[in-house]
Every structure is written in C-alpha cells, then in structure tokens.
Length: 168
Image 1: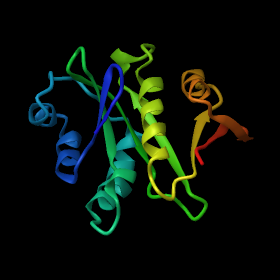
Image 2: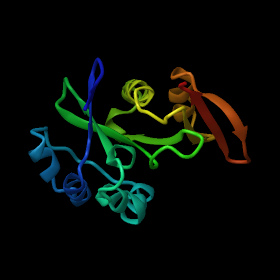
Image 3: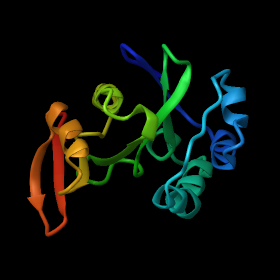
C-alpha cells in the first residue's frame, strides 16, 4: 500500500480483481469503502481478461508489477481511479505504466498525485531503472499528468507520444 497526501494506492489481489470486474460493489464492501458506480472501459476489461488476471495469478512473479492499484480518496473513502504496471521490469529495467481516473473524479489532480506516488515506489524496487508510458496526442490530460511528474517525450508517432522518466 502507498499513501500520498489525498490518496491510498492499494494493489488488488487476484480475488479482489475478480470482485473488481463484477461491478457489484463487493470490492468496495470488502475494502470498507463507499459504494461507487465504476465503469470498466472496454480496453481495461480486455487487458484484465487477456493478461492481468493471469499474471497476478502467477505466484512465480511479483504481482505488484501486474495488478491494478486502486486509488482511494481519503476524504471521500471512495475509489477514484486505478493504475497498473504492464509487468515486471524488462532487461533494460523499464516498466510501463497505464492509468485511468473515473469520470466524476477527473480534473482534480488525483492521477498526477497517484503517478507521483508510484514513481517513488518504483525508485525503491530493485531492477527498475525507468518508467515508460504512452499517451494519445489528443489526450492533453494524460500528457499533463506525465509532464507534471517529469516524464519526457522520447518518441512521437502519428497518434502517440511515448514518454520516459529515468529513476536510476
């Protein structure tokens, strides 16, 4: 668990991910949180079904690099978004981060704060040398989150900016 000024970032276990997918507030009940009307994007649902659940179930791997970390607002005692790394560090020590804020909680700085907390956590992990991320060129909010956390653009494609922050 990671704590920032306004958030608690909690990594979800395999069983908690199953509850997360149900969207029936069973996860919120387990975590003693206010009920929410979370929506899972089609992209996240596909990632959960195709890779995240399997990687988290693999006990030979550190699940913290594959699971969803839910963002809990301390003030509202509610889930406001989530983020994840896309697996353990590669041979270059890179990990990729992805994130999303639930619609009612956008434009409040939660994700900027959460990404900052995850950077601090990643700096403490052996074998992690940098974090990479991608954002759609038209997603100015995502670009702003990365800029505020000192990521720099390392590549541009027709649709994407590819970002990186060096930790060590």
